Length: 282
Image (cartoon, rainbow, N blue to C red; front, side, top):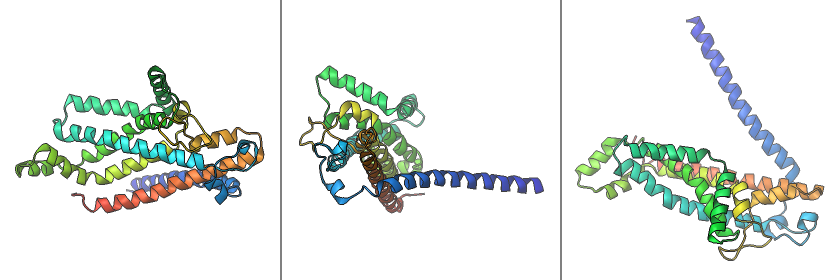
């Protein structure tokens, strides 16, 4: 009995240390970025476009990167949901439970989930060259959609698998079709959709390798899908590459702004998830 008590204490201490270690990493990242970047993070920097010598320490801002990131993330999130939700419904409503097609589909998305973003960027770049397309906002949306669809599918699928099978049987017993049953499942997996969207947006807005090949970079805000688009991660990269200390401080300010955006999205996602969770049947 005493040995079990000691084991319990050791496990509790190890879990506490692991939690403190993760929190320490998070706090150190925020502290390092905030301490260096808060001095350069001004309203003028957020609301103005980069000037001719912005990357040489002259006046200007990162509005182009902010708007470009939001355009790419917004477009890819909408497309990702449009593609992913039917796949989840097909696996969990239309296909038989435990079918081989469901198994291989989940295995495929597990593999796609672990592929680095630079591989997606290289693939999308090859497709764009084959089609004769140039780097553009549309290319950035395309590669980012490829990047986040596996996140959408696997996150929502895990929630859909937890929906009680008796709920579907009760729906069918009332004369509902499979398409109508999908509406019932959607109501149950709404928290999973919100969580998947949060995870996908967090990865999409922080990706640099994929959009480097496909979206390009510009000091202007794109007016159409075939124009290049800047993103915050690439803006941070280009500013940190400068040997001028003032420009490097602006890079930390951009990174701080990116962190704040992700934090706001995380809090918003948790609020939405908690509200949707009230409608779930447990």
